[in-house]
Length: 420
Length: 148
Ligand SMILES: Cc1ncc(COP(=O)(O)O)c(C=O)c1O
Picture 1 (tube, helix red, strand yellow):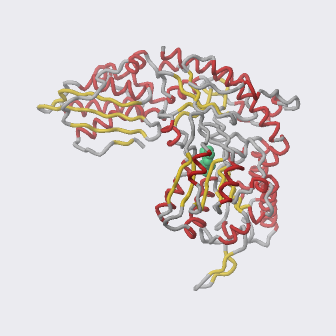
Picture 2 (picture 1 turned 60 degrees about the horizontal axis):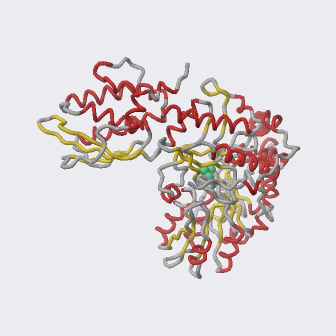
């Protein structure tokens, strides 16, 4: 099997990265599982929350809870102000032009469905083409399959090589003046591959296609600059960014969002409703029907403050170093196969063990306090590509440590002992 | 005291490593597939019945140790059983892996090795997939079985 390339990107831990104090921010890291310290390595599924986020949520419900955009009373004004402040934080965080471009949704999944239905369903027709990739999470596959069924547009997939990297020559062959939408993950949740999205975006724009980037896995690990990327849409979920579940962001270029019809109808998204007809609200409210997840938005704002203060670059550097260490340790385990060995990778270690099914690995590791994900990672086409039913996946965050990598390796050793 | 070996008992490890009755049964009179969408466990059950008895039974497919060992143990236990006995065993096995009630150790025999599964809610489906598949097959239902 392929071994990952660790030699050429070893980076030393930044001296300023105070891991001990950082861990103190995450109360859950003190939990025990089966009498052993929790080693949480399932960060790609969802990340843990720092006390700054937990306390912000608590304070919101204790001191400011109210509905927004509709009350003249003080609490409502207070809640509206912190809600809109959070939108501003998101705008700054991804360097969007305007808060009109920041739409709050339930998560990456809802954002993709919104674009597929509002933009896709209204502009695509039979003969048009959509391009996605073999690496996608199901949430960036199924909405396009539905759209394809509704409109007759054809859905094409950019294939991947044995390392789990997109084959760009194949992408170029798929592109044509029929291409309307290219939807691509920034970072693969199953393998950790970092895709060359800038190149992908530029090539799509050259044929006049719009581009959606699924940034669910990228936002916690890299600084995003939507202006520099030039993408038309960028989507992510708060819960993978150390914020609450149930809240996410759709970034869309203002002119495109302006041209799109509402996705859902209801309160807040209208200006005037008569029995005959309604006029819709301005951006971004046109896409925020109903009472939103106010606490979620405010919690997401706190999470953005947290990672901004921490410094995502420093965190990514630390995570990279941790991944290299994990790769080194894991390559010494006999019978361990790496799945996904892209040169450009984030801190995800997907693997199989000879003769031991990933679900058994997951259960035995859990017995050692080590939480990983075992399964198809909502990326069944990736599993099919590698001809395996599932992998075991350890995914690291900046609060993980080398000792935790050691605990993982020891737990893997335990798996082999149980089965041999 | 927590011990992972309560789940992965010797019998289970052994039946996973060398599953019994593994492979396609030629001229089976019932063939039914079972699928666990959460894990990707897949198995096909082959069944031959005569005079209200299971005269032969086999399986193939792929899955985790719990699902493979469970199918191996189940097929061993089912050979030669009458359909009524099979139903009784199905109910007793269900009781074993989903409740804390006392179980009939004598009736279950080696199957009791799967008792540990009930402490792992996510894994109960792995152990019961083959049983649900058998149950459907015996009921004459020929739609593939899915555990949700
Ligand atoms: C790459 C990727 N895209 C999309 C999603 C969907 O995110 P959510 O379930 O929060 O909507 C995930 C979550 O696992 C993901 O990893």
